[in-house]
Length: 287
Image (tube, rainbow, N blue to C red):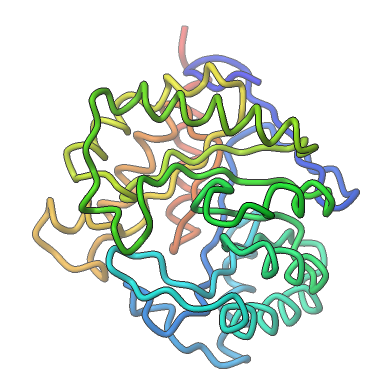
């Protein structure tokens, strides 16, 4: 797989026996099942509204829906695996019944939730801790035979902004991924996606530095997920609210795509799809 400007781009994911092949970057739509999400547009959706939201995301071009039940914003309050399962399992089951051809990712660092979510219809695990908060996670994911997203986070959601200190940001994150990829491979996980964790234990300046150097992670030969949508690096830099951060999100999504992102995890699918189409056209025009 190559993903630098002007080169070919392909990657595949085996989602519970269903092989998905992609020839350009794809979009993951965020479905929050949390009462304290930082973006108000996704709070407390009733069943009909949830289905309408998911349907619109799929129609707009989302390849994957990512369901999370535990807020991981800075300073958020952690909930138990049981409480998280109570939030996400009904949503995953509902989405899987209504949109069986759309892969669903569960956003969790609890192995118990990951296992139950896959049984409920999820076919991918998105772990903000990269397997470091639950020692059983890697063996569970390997047994489930689903793709695994490893995200880099320094500390925990409760402490990460107090420990955002690095000697060499990109080198430390690269070393983290090398170790985690090796450990995941040894555990028996075959399809691995890496997420550098924008906003997770990084300052605003560090987030922009990471985005500027995102292409360094192409050396790992794994799809790169960029989670930038409506984050504080955007709205604090612009002096606006998360609700007004769509345009800023699209700008950073475009930069991420130019610098090697394979997946964008977003709240707003249609603008992200437009960014992908325009960046792909721009790459094809390269001499």
